[in-house]
Image (tube, rainbow, N blue to C red; front, side, top):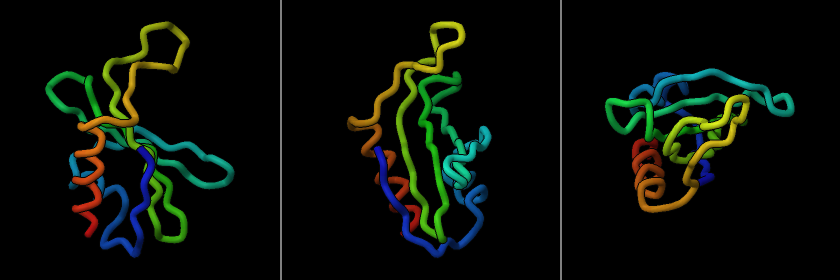
Length: 101
């Protein structure tokens, strides 16, 4: 699920996401814009987990959230079972939006 959080932000992206229970996995560069990668585990195991790709553009956050159900099954493949919609994803989106209000 894609959504936007309007800035200005009260703290750094890393501190804000940490307060929401997300852990930083790394970053990529997409068309000259850094994209940050965060996950939030739903239990003791690594999966299922919420996975967010986040871009900061002029103080606004552009988030792409999905739920990873399990890790990649095939060696060398990046695809895995994930949900971009559904009740859990919608609830997590609301939780994140409410935090930034």
